[in-house]
Length: 119
Image (tube, rainbow, N blue to C red; front, side, top):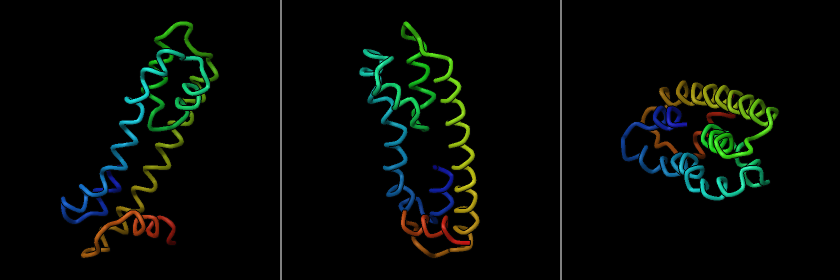
């Protein structure tokens, strides 16, 4: 996500305006640690552990608190995280390719979405 934002921006000020949503995706798991620790087998913890940016942190928390978690959840979490990583790397590559050629345009989420959907 950060690579795509960096590739789409020419100036540091452009990148700073786009960083808030990306940082929120990283900060959400940290803000939800207490509910996950209090109920590691609950529905909230289970669904949050399959949200790809949160998967590594939340799964480690859930495994550390007894009774742990079932093996299928850990395996599914790894598969979801790997799939999301591949998808993000491909998207960042496409944004980078088009962003390099689009010199002079200010980056926005709308522009990046158009770049992703273009052929």
